[in-house]
Image (spheres, each protein chain N blue to C red):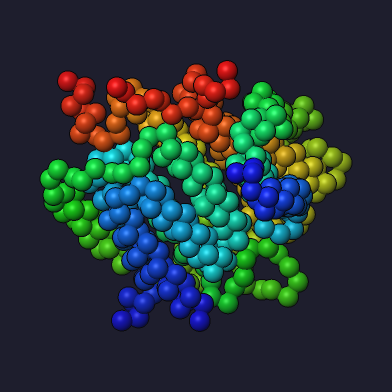
Length: 143
Length: 178
Length: 116
């Protein structure tokens, strides 16, 4: 598909705006619809779109497989460690109000880091699923 | 007016599902599934569930359709004609449907403010979320703060699905890239 | 009559669930069975969210000037359910791909024949 000039130009135009929209949805999830899941899927959709237009090898050069694997594991780790920070600062697991002197600011911080963890895992898993399904070769027909 | 929009969209969704059941070309079935997911996302916006609509549009109409197309490419395109008439599944489905219809007649009507789901925990979340967490989006506050454990479990489920697919599909690669 | 109008959304939910169940039971193609399973899951989303809607209310985002909000609790539960649904679908599709490579077909009857 990369020989078609319209698709190439549109893909190059759309991809940065899609990534910025994913970041917008992530950080404005507190004030409007959005949050970690939606942002993760939109970011994964940008990478999948690029891979569909320019080929799987170009997509793998842009975002290598091992980077995606590390990212998807880091997301769950960030979430779990935010919970442990609650224990370290005197509360129970996943208590946010102990994360700062002012409990409401503590809640803000906890929610921010938790949503970052969710977005990392969801985007990593969606990109990895696409790589796994698209990278597998079709078996040759039996004779 | 709102109720009319919702009912019309629901009726179109029912028609789409009937077409999906009768269609044997699997590519057509996957496209109908994408259409169905978009209709579901529209109905969810009409039902004031904006977060859920965004997730359903992105996940159901986006990622699910891409994965189904990927699996379809790897397996093959048409469903074989059934060898015998599926009368037992049809009878069983109609029986289950009849029992469910009988059960749902006892549920509260559409948009009933006195329904039990509106009187227990939900008013507390709506009233206390800005004061306790400082986040106006009540769904995000409940998801990340009041029900944070559930979201941790769900992130672990997504992670497990990723690991599972990696374990199942890792070995064979495109032969041309070697 | 108004009882039927008030329960129309439940009726459609039951229809979608039973249609998904029929596709799951009656079709032998594994890919179509997985799509039937996904249909049953989406009908449950509708079952949870439709009763939470209040006519004249708005989305549950606290803002100036709005008094009635739709119930936020089903939205939270269904957000989790949607993501778990796609996880299930992805694992099911990976298994179908491996079955195709092992048995050469994804029709249930042919796989059972080849098993014996």
